[in-house]
Image (cartoon, rainbow, N blue to C red; front, side):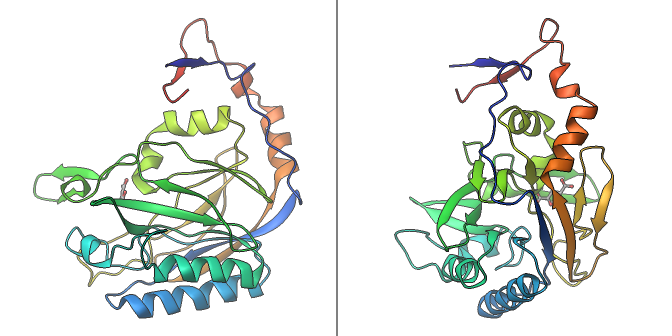
Length: 268
Ligand SMILES: O=C(O)CCC(=O)C(=O)O
């Protein structure tokens, strides 16, 4: 069923988070071909970020494997039914550090298919939710770059809104950011933060040259904190009350002209 979303009346209020101010860390990891090393390295970086005060820690897209269609089937893990050293580490790291952890993404195998999936853990190590990338990165720019995730991966079919103790988070992955309808639906569902695990650190010896430059951006589009190309942990403070104030001050979400256009939520 398709439901027209009226941002003024249909906004779903999030539950009150345990803290309105907290520190987050964007971990722009260097990723290599050695999976075990990638997992150990991610664990060390999560521990460091939490040790430096972050309560919400975010990893990049595909942090346990090189970003390539050849690698995805080799590095993929079955989560739940099978052995998954990557998500076991994420759950353990979240509990050990008492943090909310958006675990970037890993190639996930499920029922014979492969997905690009982000697993999100709460501060007791519990799995809060998962996002399977819904817009696969399929581009072909003649003479420049050709990448077709869809040759190997299956797109997810769910939007992902997760209530955490630090607020309501809409999760999507990398190329998903180019589709503003998704962000608008997340906003209409009351998300206070949108998290898009994107590139790891730039590595010009890798098959795909990710861009790096992980960033935290506020409701006015201002870059609050950002990395360069290389491996980094970027710390920044999030103030949910301030975000709510900023949204109230320029209330464009409540000023949409639903008599002229509307957002259809096809999942409802
Ligand atoms: O949107 C882009 O420019 C890059 C997307 C990408 O690298 C990805 O989705 O993995």
